[in-house]
Length: 639
Image (cartoon, rainbow, N blue to C red; front, side):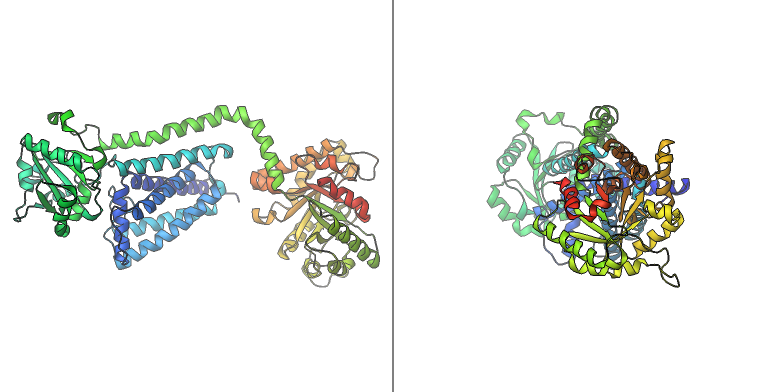
C-alpha cells in the first residue's frame, strides 16, 4: 500500500511517539520499581487483594512490566520484529486504555502510576494520553511495513538482548540499592528548614511541611530536625512485618556510634504499626528510641525497608539502602555531603549506558558486520527460508485421458504414494470432467487436486465456461491460471487473468500462476521485462495476505518442444529474479515464503539437478505426469 509523503510522515510520527513513550515509561518504572510496586498494591487493595508492599509478588510483575514496555519501545524505534511488536503494542494499549477508563469512572486508586512519581497525571489526563497512544498503536499496526528498520534483521537480537539485560539490571540495582533518580519530595538535598521558614512554597515544600514524626508522648520532632545543626539519623521502617532484619548488628553499631558521639538516632515505624514496636525491638534487640510516622511518607523517604537517612542543618544530606549501610568508624561524618550531580545529568548517564553499546552495535552492523558476513548470512538464510517453503510437484494432465483412464491413473498414483510416501506436496490438475470422480479416489492427505483453468466470470450465460465456484464444488483446491498455452491459443490477457485470480481467491482456491517468455523474447534478452510485466499485470493488485495463496510456475516456453534446452542455471537465474521482484513489491519475507515451480521440460533424469537450485521449489510437470513411474521419479527427486 503506497502512502503520500504526508501519510508517511504521520505514520512515522505515530511510531516515534508510541516508541518514545514506551521507552520512557519502562525506564521510569525500572528506576523506581518499589514505587511502582506500591502503586500496583493500591490496585490490588482496591480489588480486595492483600499483598505486602515489599513482597516478590509485586516485584515480579513490576520487573515484567518495565521490561516489556522498554523493549517494545526500543523495537518500535528501531524497526525490530515490526509486525509482532506493533501487535503487542496495540494489545497492551487496548488493555491499558480500558483500565484507565475504569479508573476515570470509578476512582479506585489516587494515581494510575504510568510514569511513577516522575510525572503525575490526573485520571482525565491519563485517559486522554492513553487514547492518543491507542490511536498511534492502531496506525503503527496497520502500517507496520512502513517502519524503518534501523538494524538488520539478522543482528537485531543483539539490541534485543542489550535492552533486556539493561532494563533488568537497572531494575534489580534500584531494588537492591536506591533509585538512581529520586522523584520524591524527600530527595537528597531537600531543605526542611527552607520549607518551614522560607517565603516561597512549592509542592515539594508542602510535602516537607506535612512530614511528621511523633514520639510516645505525641510530640512532633520534625521542627527540631529542621533547626538541628548536628547530624540526625532516621532508620525508616515502613512495614515492620516485612522488614529485613538481616542488618540488625550493623544498625545497632550505628546507634552505639551515635550515642558515643552525641548524635541523634531514631527508628521510625508506621503509626498504623504501633503495636509492632515491641515486636521489632524483640526481634532486633533495638535499644534506640522509636518514633511514629505516616506509612506512605516512610515509603517515599527511603525506598528500602528498613532504610537510613541523615539530616543536618535541616537538610536531607544522604540516604542509604539496607544493603549499603555506612560504617562510621571508617567514614568521616562531616565529609558526608549531598551528591552534586544533577538529576537530569544522572538520567543522561543512565541512558548513555544503554545508548552507547547499542549505537556501537548498530554502527558495527551497518559498516563492518554487514560487509563481512553478508555472503555467509545470505547463504544460510536461503537455506533456512528454502526449508520453510512448501515443496510441490504438480502434474498438469492437459487434454489427455478419458474419464475412466483418468480415474485409473489417479488410483494408481494414490496406491504408489501410499506405499512410499512423498517428501513434498503432490498436486494433479486434471480436465474438468475428471475432477469430481478423481476427488473420490485420491488420498487428500497425499495428493492435492486442481483444475487447469476457470472462467473470468462468476456465473451467467457463458456457454462452455466453468466457474471457480464450480471447480471448488468438485473437491478441488488448486487451479492453474495463465498457462502459456492458454495465453497463446486463447488470447488470455493480463486483465482476463486478473479477474480469474480474483474469482479463484474468492472461492478459496490456491492458484498455480504461470509466467514465462517465448523464444523471440529470450533471444532479444527481454525475459526479465516480460516476466515482470506478467506479474504486474495480473497479481500486483493483490494484498500481501492474498498473494500468499499464489504458487508461481516459471515456464521457459522457448525450451518446451523446440529442441532447445534450459539449463538448471538458467532456471535458477529466472527464479531468483522472480523472487527479487516479489520482494520489491511485497517484502522479503513474503518473497522467501513464495513457492516457485519450474515449468519447463522436467524429467526424472534432470529433476534432482533442477530441484537442487536454491530458488527452485518444485515443478509443474506435463507429459511425465501421465505415467506414474515417471511422475514418481520426479517426486522422488526431493528425497
